[in-house]
Length: 65
Image (cartoon, rainbow, N blue to C red; front, side):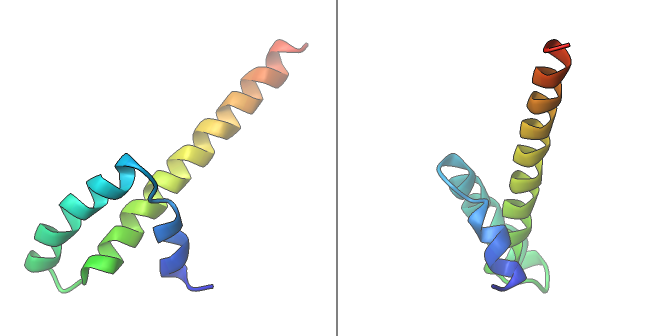
């Protein structure tokens, strides 16, 4: 498994559309290719999702006390 694949795994549904719309103009203005940019965006979405889930679990455990 490559690092790029992990980032691209975070792109599902509307997130993929956002990454696609952003990656093309950014790749034209930078030295990165579209897949690299999409993988970074996907990784950010994946991390944000994980943080949301961890926060929800913490709230659930705290409400159980």
